[in-house]
Image 1 (cartoon, helix red, strand yellow):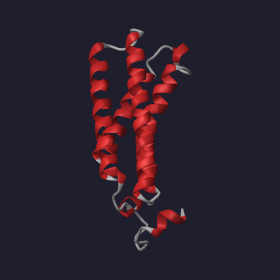
Image 2 (cartoon, rainbow, N blue to C red):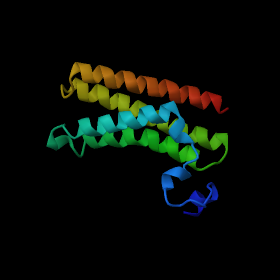
Image 3 (tube, rainbow, N blue to C red):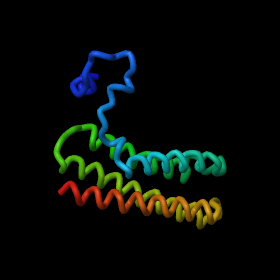
Length: 137
């Protein structure tokens, strides 16, 4: 909690939403990856029960890791090199989601339209992460 309070004016603690000063939540890649992670999470719950602790868990974890690593990298308030490390981890997780989408689709467990949409979203997320990493050098 100490880290949280060092950034904010403490005069009005009635509404903690007013304390947000704007960081990673304003990044397009964060917004897109968060929204996509929610969609992947909901979809994964529709997979057969025998896959819930297998590929469903893998894709949920990888999808959630992307916005989580963006948040952690920016939340540490350290060097650009530190941010790049977290963004590279997010990029690796993005590739893991893309692999799992291919795998789930190849098993016949995902409709073509849903697959195409998810594949497009995660391809865009990967490009956005790559470009963001380049800007932090």
